[in-house]
Amino acid sequence: MDLALAEAQKAALMGEVPVGAVIVDPAGNVLASAGNRTRRDSDPTAHAEMLAIRQAAKFLGNDRLLGCTLYVTLEPCAMCAGALSHARVSRVIYGAPDPKSGGTDHGARVFEHSQAHHRPEVVGGISEVACSMLISDFFASLRFKD
Amino acid sequence: MDLALAEAQKAALMGEVPVGAVIVDPAGNVLASAGNRTRRDSDPTAHAEMLAIRQAAKFLGNDRLLGCTLYVTLEPCAMCAGALSHARVSRVIYGAPDPKSGGTDHGARVFEHSQAHHRPEVVGGISEVACSMLISDFFASLRFKD
Image 1 (cartoon, rainbow over the protein chains, first blue to last red):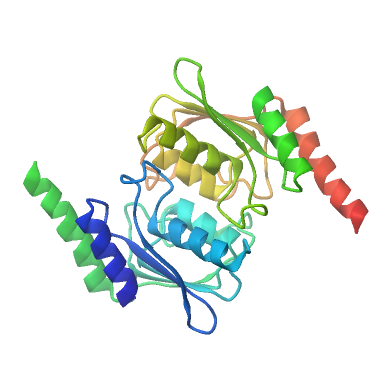
Image 2 (image 1 turned 90 degrees about the vertical axis):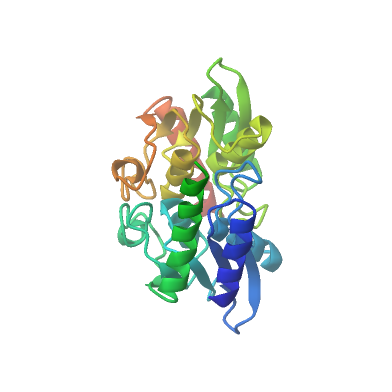
C-alpha cells in the first residue's frame, strides 16, 4: 500500500485526483503501478486501477491476472470494479472507503450481482487514514484556490 | 448502428466476442469506432465501448464527451457503463439486451445509483435481431469447434 500511496502523491502533484494502485503477482512481485491520469491523458477511463490492470496484462501477455492482488488507495468505482472482475484479479485491498463514488461496497456493488462472472475477495480500510487524508487535502486545496 | 455492427463483424473475424461501438458528436460526426479487442491486445478493459470512448476523448483532447451519443451492439457491462458516466456521454443506444453480463438494465444497473454522477439517456433494442444474431452465431460456432 506504501507504493500505491506514493503513486497517489505523484498524481496529486500533477493536479490529478490522488489515487494510486499497484498489482502484485502470487509470488509478491510488483507487475504494475500507476496513479490517476484522466486529465493529463484526456482519458476518462484512466483511473489508477485501470492503468495498472492494462499494464500488468500487457506485461503478462494475458487478459487474465489470475492469482494477482490489486492494492488501491481508494475504494474502486463501478468501472474499475467491472474491470477487476473481467481481469479475474483474486484480491482487492483498498484504503479509504468511498461512499460518494465507490462501486464495490457502495452504490452499484458490482461484485454482488450474478452478471459479475468473477468476484475477487475484497478487503477495505487498510492504511485508511493516510489514504483518506490525501484525498481530503487535495480537495481542500482546490477549494482554497477558488 | 450499421457502423457498430460492421465493427462487431470485424471483431468476430479476429476471434473476439463480436461487439462494436461508435461515438457520434452532437452534429452527427463519427468521432470513434471500435470492436472488442480483449484477446488481441491482452487487455481485459478493451471492450468496444472503452476503446471508442478513449479514441473520441483523445481526438477531442478532453476527458468529457459532452453531447455525444454512443451506439453499441450489446448492452454495456458495469465497467463500460461506469466509463460512459465518467465521460459524460449524453445518450447510449444499444442493440441486444444482455441479461447475463449487462450492467445498465441488468445486474449492477450502474446509472441507477447516486454514485454515478452522470446518467446518460439509455435506449435499448435498436437493431436487436441483427445484434443478437451476431453474438449467438459466434458462440454457436465456438461450441461447434469443441
